[in-house]
Amino acid sequence: MSTSQEVPTLRVNLDVHPISRAMRDGRVKSGLVNLEYCGPCPAHNGFKSMLQENGFDAGEIAIVTFLQAKAYGKPFVLLPVPILGRLQHHCAVYNSAFGQLAPKDIEGKRVGVRSYAQTTGLWVRGILRHEYGVDLEKVHWMTLEDGHVAEYADPAGCERLPHGTSIAQRMLDGDLAAALLGAPDMPKDPAVRTLIPDAHAAAKDWFAREGVVPINHMFVVHEELSRRRPDIVRDIYRMIVESRELAEGLPPIFPPIGLEANRRNLELAIEWAFEQKIIRRRLNVDELFDDLTGALG
Image (cartoon, rainbow, N blue to C red; front, side):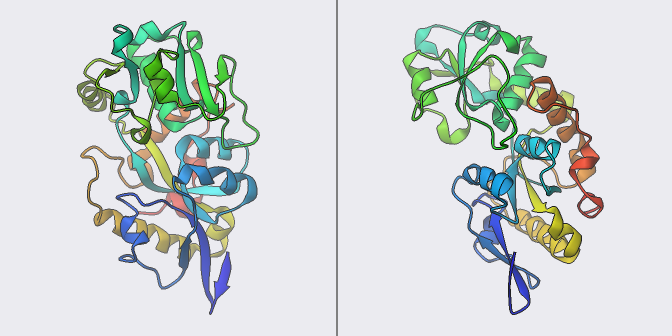
């Protein structure tokens, strides 16, 4: 954190999303702090720098990455404002040109995911296990990257693909039986089908039963900033809330604002991260926040 004319400047890793657009284009500003949006696009390319090199003072971070960071004592605290989130059932896909595939059919087969600790992967694997009875330990998880936290190592059953591999292309070629993919990586090939039948309807039914909106990214600040400048942290929170109010293009089902409103979302992320051996202990939702950030809103 640097200062200019007594107004500090924070290095922030925040991509352009519907929620952040009004902050990034200057419609929502602060008189207390300058936010230098110096992170990469996509933002996940800055997570390692944030956690391993203190490259940023604040910014968005994948919730699974943050759970690992908290478990290993990294000096960041969560603000109760999701930046990205969505229903995830449609993110498991396969190439129907090689035959029909049901969720249980991936047992014993190779399934690609960018990183085992990727948040989309966490949510989809949890849904496959708890809704469709898939034994995740019988799946051969093929990955491209390690996690963003240096202390983490993939569990048994994961194998690294060669650098530069396209998971989507390998799935299209039949080398991978299925893939867990976010929207930017989803191929447009008409033969691609969702592993979960009628995935969007299944997701809405799951949401109606569980009341959970899977969170992808939330906003964090360095714990020192929260201790020394609570006024700035409150103002950043205000900015995100106001920017969200101006957002266009948000899906109709999106994570809410506030700790209690997101408690169930976060509890399930913790539970599934522990089940899938991404974190070594079950964290408590309240330890993700400090006294200041947990009371925001």
